[in-house]
Image 1 (cartoon, rainbow, N blue to C red):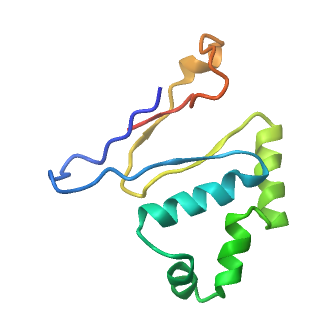
Image 2: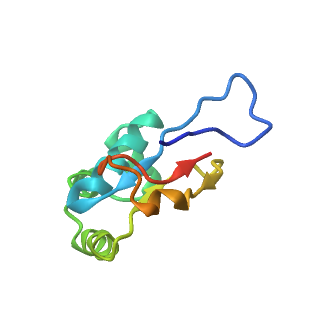
Image 3: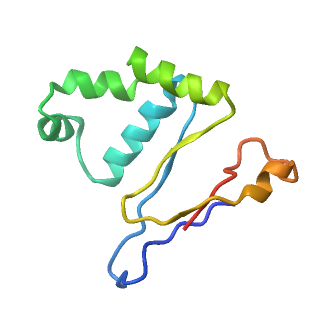
Length: 113
């Protein structure tokens, strides 16, 4: 079960930002696209902020960055998942999920707060 909340001091007008699970070859690309959408940016606007061509953002979102894909696969192959969380999030890892009591293979095993 994943719970998301912002730090104490959040006011009623702040929006809780999504978090992303980086898995597999396309997980990073989907996460980047999701974060970009959550920020309300187009690919061209993100590219301008990064100082790159829009085609670079397109390639990243399509999962066509071999080095990043290998890094994600390496962690996944060792039994680790990488997550991208908003900088203002507090992350709590629930190690009880490692005991095998969580039967849902595709559900997050970390609790995000």
